[in-house]
Image (cartoon, rainbow, N blue to C red; front, top):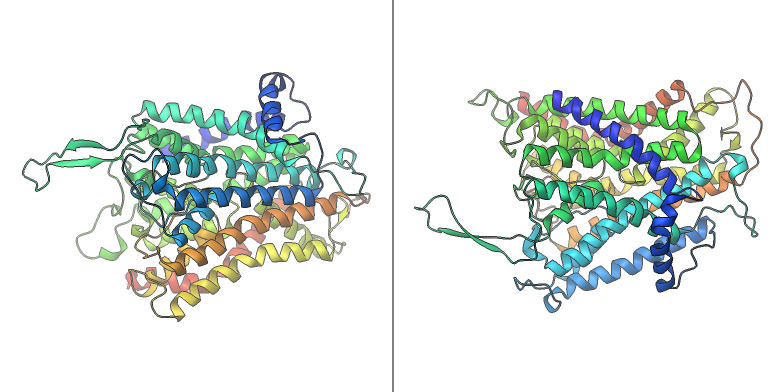
Length: 569
């Protein structure tokens, strides 16, 4: 319990100054920061031929965001497909099949890092560094700057909204925001964490696989090839950037990625550090600190509740062996150097932040622990991905404002600006799409023989398939391992979920924020809905729980809840 409290306290204490710093990065003028980073940024813009001083409306920002991602995705697909002909490939690894290359490029492009391949065995050093790690740096930063553009409109005070000549509202310049955030936030933080975990023993080298003697001299094979490489840099950004894709197949349960309790603590804090800091940043950037405090309070309440359930579940005996010889906590699929509590904390945090990295195998968790990871991803706004987590929370908040206004007999509005039919339609699409795609693909996988490729029968087999599609749409990347998911069906259908789960919420809220910011604010009175209050925070909490439960309760009964009841009997 002490390690859980310490992790929350350290994360919150570090996120407060980081959030203040991030707000200063995106301010119109950053003073000393401009003097240090400005010349480098201007050099990048000149080299790329970009006019970063030109403000964009939401359509221009969204178009630049999408064009950048399409180009980057095509480049990484090319690297993965042709990696056998590219340099930095000392182990002679061949290129991926088209469908696996498509899924892998899409997965890392959407800040998901869902892997249908086994870690280092199918990627060269070149593909890792110039494909995977590049996306792990850029894509979370892109989510962050999309949030900043939304904060400049949706949460802006009326006197700070800037109108363009076209009549649209200015939201910033995508390229300026992206380069500024990479140089001033993402890379410095990743460098610091990489140094810390390399100090704990995580490899950082360009040498090929190392040959080592096994501990058992009587074994048939007395030597073993151990892949190494620039692991520390990838692990640092996978944790900080809510990425999750590991250098090794079993991810952070491998001692080379996570060798000590100290490295485990550093990596656990890194899971939630930037997502928490983005809420604080939004408060400073918009001047609405009470709103940010209310949002963070709801996030922490949800997090603590679900972490507590996960920790309780994994400290119970293995549910499959209750009544037999199993008496201690569930240690199946867990590293003894971490134990059930640290493993459950990591598993809850990694699904609450759309990170997806693991230090234990979620497929081996007790059913109620598996339920926690699924609920985390259904909600997808408990801290969430870098930038996108708060975007998803604001979608819930807008729905709460709509419902709350109707409950008190007022026209739906936020900060005196009307919520009209077009905004509610966009909001509805963004909130209803997860259940539509997740449940449709899950059902289709079981409806047609041979598609699911699940390794477990009955309740747990349903959970395996449900988890994979949920993980893809929530841009999480973790999985109930055991699926034969390197097939054309799995690679293509999960790629659809990856793309819609990433880009629909971002573009929808960009449009909603710009539309709302362009409206005249009506005076607020005593009867107006106030959103910077504890009452509204509780209303938003209720909306989040109801949406997640009502959308997915039937399939949860067929999955982890049914499994728990079956094993209990």
